[in-house]
Length: 254
Ligand code: NDP
Image (cartoon, rainbow, N blue to C red; front, side, top):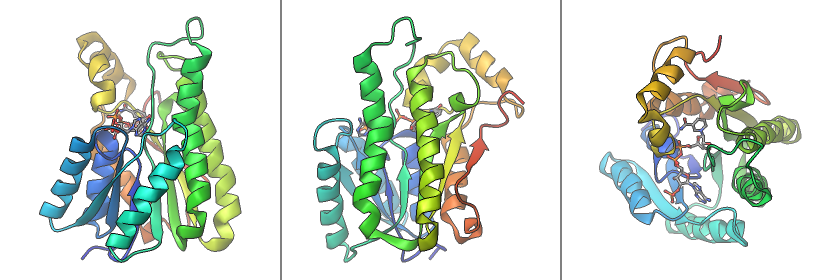
């Protein structure tokens, strides 16, 4: 049993990519993990199976974010899963699900595309947090997955970095509000990491080389590089850290 045994975590978008890595790591540390997905149920089941085969505990929750009633759907699935495991509250909330419509500089970005990224990257985390506040145990953790594009001007457009910047400000403001309950709120700033989201860009050797050359440590990030940092923020070791962000990018643009 790890140091998170007895704790319950919800990781949005943990069917694939960084979210999956976070779910697997938190489960390895002992937490019961709600593996949330949007549409890829098979991938979510795979994450949960990997966890249970390793001796951990997990259940899946399906809810497309950024559509009407998204938070209601997620809450219904979460509550059912918690009940089935004899739980009613959560300790760790990781806002990881994100939408990056790449290649949309200001010249071509449409209001609809912008609304879609706002709905998934900001509105869903905000109102999911609102609904979960009564179920989030004192001393808990909220961790936002942000992007290095809030620090360096992005090649991929204007909408996505704006939403991630808003997510960081959300965390900063919320940390003050939830401090009296001993709940910490922080953001993990992620650099270029190998997942489905970046597979297309990284398939181009020139793009791959350019992104490697931006880092101090000289490689592309891997999912565990991010998951381990999230696990630290979720742990008791990070109890005195709140309202801030950690740059987990291998030193991009130092
Ligand atoms: P992936 O595209 O590989 O995975 C996205 C995950 O989020 C999937 O589990 C997906 O579920 C879920 N998801 C996406 N949109 C929705 C939606 N509308 N409703 C519900 N679930 C949704 O992404 P990454 O793992 O690469 O990214 C994870 C986070 O890290 C994101 O917030 C991203 O912005 C951020 N990030 C990633 C970087 C990178 O280089 N990869 C860099 C900086 C930040 P499903 O399987 O059902 O589709």
